[in-house]
Length: 393
Image 1 (cartoon, rainbow, N blue to C red):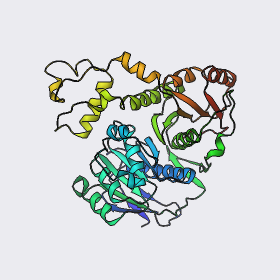
Image 2: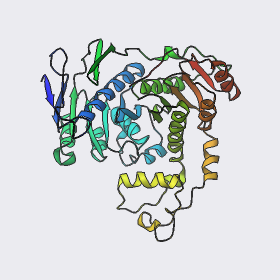
Image 3: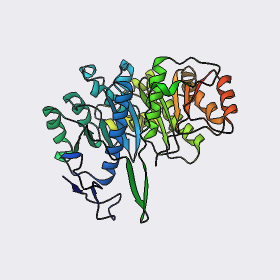
Image 4: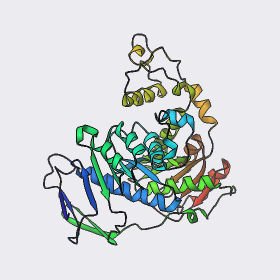
């Protein structure tokens, strides 16, 4: 197939939408099911590049959940705790650990369930039956993978009344070195961002604290590769083999750091026993639970009011006070943080450590690098200068 006609572009009023190869060669993707859209394909192709790089850099199967050209999270197939399985609503899948690809997607979807609603999924390896079962019960627009088992394809084709988007990509496809785009009738051209991110990027430690465990290196790699496909400015917090807070597309870096840090805080708070043990009524759907958990953690005043909580819970939950939350978060350590460019001010470091950050990787090159290093030394944070900017637009 050399050309694929689409329903419309970014919006319904943008017609004449299609994809094709600039050199008139065959498209490297096959539509196995559904009627894929313009934004779906942008998410799919960016997501595929991300998981390919994660797999190459770490050796683990990888997955990402994409929304509007930025990942909500990305993860590799390392183990997750029982509490995290409960927080991700996958504790009922008894054979989850037997499928590395399913494990990676459960983490990528679960890290930020609110933002993953209606995601486009990218998988580094074959989509198997267990992975398909997880996808089948979530609100999602589609999936891209290099292959599907027969049973996985059967499950996915039944999703959304048979309209679910299932894409297969040629895993051996290598795009041309030059990439182009048009804006306002003007063609832009540049080399693809082929920079390789691996453990070698963690060598230039510039702080007094030189401690950098292997698991932190892995998390920093995940954070930086995630940022490579996140709309700038961007910040990524990572822990346990997954991105736990992504701040994308902000004009101010401190706002990215705060946004991503707030998401990372929520990721930790969702593992608190008060949240894990919320007594939901049986009929409450998974998306409704996501919204209610978010409201509960946010301490929305009306959620636990009389004659209102009965809509969601078997019994009235205890309040999860801001004091309790602050105390719980104050004990968090070992979080990794990546930035797609240098920190212009030390306020980013002050905010990051509030979310348990112990390891940071950023490009360096600011006129205030000395202030950034001093702030990290003050908080005993390990700081790496990568000498690599990762802007993505």
